[in-house]
Image (cartoon, rainbow, N blue to C red; front, top):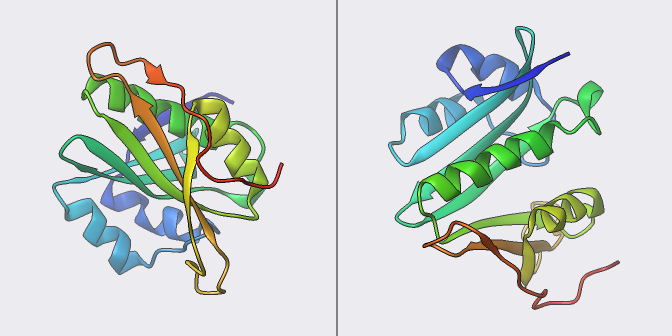
Length: 160
């Protein structure tokens, strides 16, 4: 089935909240994000169904990924990659300097995806998550003039 990436609307909130993500958002939190002028939110749709989502803050010349998640029954099908690819294109078009995100240290699949897109690990946040798991801080850097991704080695050692 064809996947479409579209801006999230208020009508998508219930479907998005039902997606079991690593950092669940309530209806109220998500509706508040939709009202923030600096927030950008997209959904991936298969037909009429919301199957994945991405919430980002665009502040000045940087993007900060707050949440990206895929419906459990649609994981490992490239939906998060499609959303992140959309974000990279948005960043290039907006002459963004970098994209920032945090990811669970144990989430090797997500870390591999982010690395494949050009992100590098720049730091660790000890006991960042409510269950005390560490977060890996990752960055994707752009050359502002060309929009090309600037490769950079990890600044912290991560599990292989």
